[in-house]
Image 1 (tube, rainbow, N blue to C red):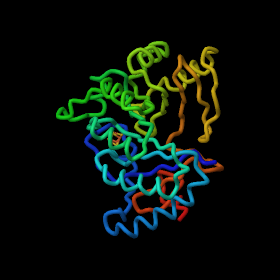
Image 2: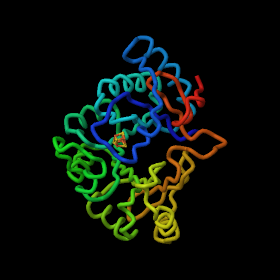
Image 3: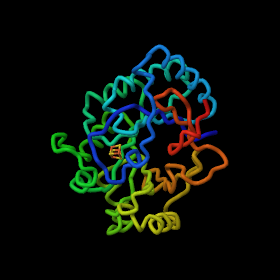
Image 4: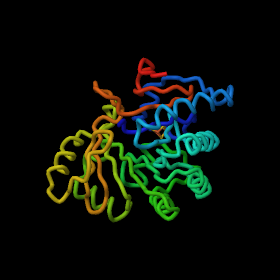
Length: 273
Ligand code: SF4
């Protein structure tokens, strides 16, 4: 079983993170959805049928901020719910910026049940500074986490391990998470490229976490990573979220805006059909 089907929503981004992989690897795809909607629908249905028996879950993501294109999310969710209702585990990867209660209501109606919120630090001011979030959004990530939970979603924090973490201990990080952010799940992600912003302590923190007997191994996920229980939070350490290393089997299927399936983010050579 392949980890997940990653559905890429064509959208821009209001943020400007210095570690943005999409700005480093600006592979362009023609957006069939805009040019010929009926053809896009037929082509996507074929890819969804192919993916249905091969993946455990769906991740709605983007080369930018997916919630800037709610119409595409609506259209793709309609197809998933119609063609592959078995794929009920659908997750949205978002920066959270501009994610209002109205949008959360729509996402819930579309059938999304997990919100994966990307964070490069655990303090509001540091997050706004690192992601260069425009002032007009008045971004408040802790209040957003509360809204996500109260609207019935499972909350996953997808933490990009920037050098903000270099001055923080593992104990401090886990205490902040369980006391203030209160996620159901946490993924610590090693930054891909952008070495000037990457934490130099990622490997040490991951090793310290995994060797602590209080953190129980829960299960081996379909994407090949162990999930741990730390103080009631499900925790995963992801050394290679871009799958840049050689792999025998694909970790993801990626449905790009051209309505074709790929197995890698960084090269069009990985196209399946
Ligand atoms: S929020 Fe995501 S897409 Fe936008 S700049 Fe940051 S990393 Fe890139």
